[in-house]
Length: 446
Image 1 (cartoon, rainbow, N blue to C red):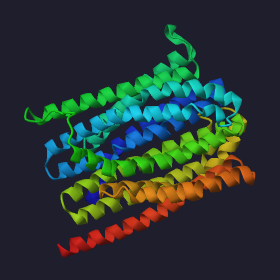
Image 2 (cartoon, rainbow, N blue to C red):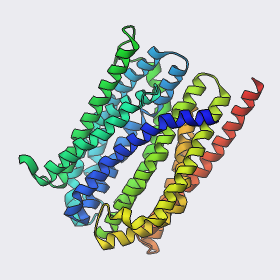
Image 3 (cartoon, helix red, strand yellow):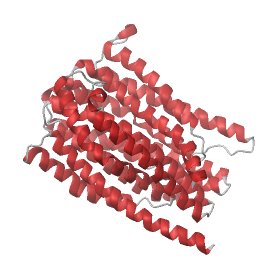
Image 4 (tube, helix red, strand yellow):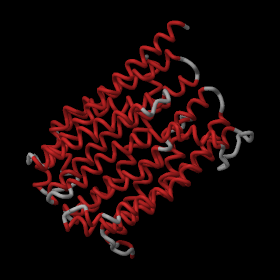
């Protein structure tokens, strides 16, 4: 178990830093539009969440790639892993146009969402601009999953960290009109984000080329020619995973839209709290990605004992991490919120939210890691069912009732969301414990 925990953390460390780097781009956007007021914070944050509700489905289609590539790597088949990358890149390009069509169609109705007028006038142009960055984002997702599958994770970390510099400079120039650039306000932030996403896709593609050159001249080239069977295999794993992450991100996006019906202060506190919670969430998300790779690698090598150990190592790590995060939320909520705003009313409501969700952090981490572990085993369907029932049938309706019917406001909305997360964690943990017992029994027979 100790060896597997060490191997997990060697992968997870750079992946977590990369995830934080990814999240930091959104945080930088929030901080740099902060001086424009609560409506700007709320509009950009809500719009980014709504964009991700669509984009995350395309990115989720790539979630089966690290499992397939890690299995091929575990079996010693590098050429097979490269073939999976070609199929994933083709799928990224093929899915971009229909996703953009859906997104533009849905967002055309934004005027009927009953948003606060101050938020609506800023959200419209921001959303339209942000959608243009979808194709490079999907290419980045395919390249990233491939690199994780072959255990090459440092380029992901460095790409995301340096992309923050690109994004910050773009924000500084395009929001406020520095260095002769036009002062575009919140829309300038969307353009900066798009530029950073093009940069991310390019850097990871160059990293892949470098790895392949290091492997030697016999390494096959990446080709976009595809076979029906492999596309279907990628979709078989990726589509349920895409639905799962879309459902999870989507419920928070809908919550953000519902928060937009409240005052700008309530929406601003919601978005600031969501930024903090989402940043902390990058740690269990990175552990889940590493767990999917380690479990998939062991599964590909037909080693049931190591497969079970890889899964349990991830749960041990996430337990330690989430207890620490819960402590920080409970004791340092106000200083964290002041990183995004000095508005006393926004901070006061945000403190209530963070202290409310602190006791639920372990459940959030556990359901995330359980999803990654099950993905490593090739099971991407079970998390979909759990998310539909817990989030959309129970959690969101409960949050809506607490917020609007019973007058709890934004705090009630968050309580409903975390009730759903808790139910997902319980369900997926029970599934994993059953699978782990089967793996241990197989190892004992061997």
